[in-house]
Length: 404
Image (tube, rainbow, N blue to C red; front, side):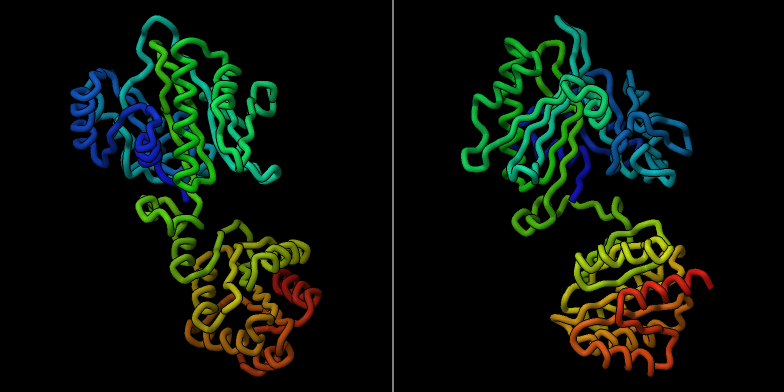
């Protein structure tokens, strides 16, 4: 589960991670009030206004309606309202949102931390994530903060620092110092960075997160270490242990169809193809998507109705798939193990009748327990539904539908 930058920073702050202070606002007036309050609390006289969406590249992204960037600097209180107005309610397009962009409903009014001092501010990159290959967490760091880390890894891989954490021993003091040393830090900044990394790792483990990414981590001109940005991915499977974190979910940032599917107990991911698929089991779903491609089509979604599929879940799956205007056919691929094929067939027929006229052709491939009985139910239903038993037969029928 993704959360906004302002939420991520509050989570980190709760574990002792030093952050760039800020206040969230949803109107230009609230943005001005936030700036006044921030000035009183921190003494800042310049303000960074940051669009709050679940996507990266906000600083380089553009608001379609006004041409404003997603991250702008206001050098006075008077500028805050007007610049927040240019962002709020607009559609921000970045390299991660795609051409459709995302509507900005909130902005973060943050203090300016790039003030002059004894030394130049310096940006670093820092993340913590699970390395599945080694079965351990890994700290990744780089002196090239504020940049696209994938580009850094591709062009200058020697600038990526990695430190693996033994899951039995946990993070050790020498490892924290090792990372700070490799970043070239000394003196106060070195000590501040070791504290920062230790607190960040504590937060990562305590929140059951799958990824923390701080880009940039800033060394200020007076050698403080701060999280200027924060991307936190929480593990959905652990949310039952963290109701306070689960409450941070912003449904407006998620695909409406995926939200609807989740409410119906379905695993759904929207794709860009033309063949909707409904399957019981993630592995079978992947094989079905491959089969669709081999038949000349493109999968329009990943949809797993689970092992206990019934008329209700099948109907919910139909309704979700049919909301995608790109779908030209629907392939239902079911292996009857936990659930019998005749039960699935009856569910398809009931759902079809409940929904009413369905304009796109439907191919139902049934295999396993009572597969022949299921195919008979489909064939004798009188509905515009075709049955198949083998993968080859299903692929041929999908191809014929797409070519007709």
